Image (cartoon, rainbow, N blue to C red):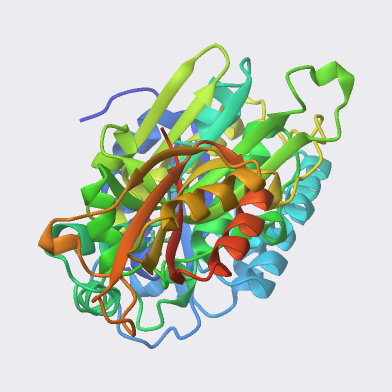
Length: 455
Ligand code: HSE
């Protein structure tokens, strides 16, 4: 039994939302009360749980006497407000009200932070209260605190993240079973990994919100959801996945935030200096640590100037894992109430320009269905060369399992598939190159264009 001295008056904790995560936060606050009190130096007293319908069925772990439909009144009588209800408008209004009333706030709301975090950060700063949001990015994985605090003395160069468990599960199933996308999404829904409406996950919105938050922290620059170039997984085919395996890759939905240093001399203020943030499916070499992130797990790979390469891995969703991150934030905010002090505020001093996705420089793998006759490869190579895109490797598969052209509406007789991997080239050059290759007479289809990351 914990025995540390607890002399400070209890701290009142209000919980907004009682879904999968909220239920686990309430459970931990109750079941771990003694340990939490010993760690904080004050008891954490759950004073209310705001819900839309107080009469709805709840997990028995919830003390129904704490339920209230009056969230506004609840936040006024709390020292720490925990928001796990989601949504934008009412979550923002309640958090601002809580901050205005002098409460510290803890939120898991990635969509709100990616859309309008600065309003909340400014309000918290003006009020001199803490705002913590570890659970907003990659669930249980400590990544906000490491980037914001542990790496505060370093320069982050690049962040590569698998930050959406649903899509990682879907792509992993396609890789391990050969299933098509629709089948894998259906299975994810049956297992409860994917929502009935999986749009936020499969179209990359969830990952883009997390990418914006990570990029803001990593580069001390405001990045919002609209700054993130986004492409989901809906165009990924079983054929793409099979080809990835043939060439020593796996396909992952990556959130990528990169610093472009304008040619190596930051003081020169080159026009290309800035930050680019994108979410898209990518080929990851099987030798890269991110390739081993299976199922619904998340991982964030950080490249920093002095620290070098770091990887953070774990559960990115689910009630208990996300509640773990929330409780860590509650303890931090509570310690400040007891001992004084305040957590870090928003850091945007760098104010780097946000570059368009076309600023990205990446390797590509392009698959083409072409007429199988002499000179075709030369024509294709010439088209790439004309755009300054250098070829790293060309494969023309002969094994029966990869004979398909990959284009469903094309016969395979007389056609061949070319798989071209390029050296790093600007995204803008690639788009023009693919367009000109597609126009070549012997090219029947550009079957797929995928970026190669993490090489
Ligand atoms: N739906 C998200 C995921 C979890 O699949 O990872 C919450 O952000």
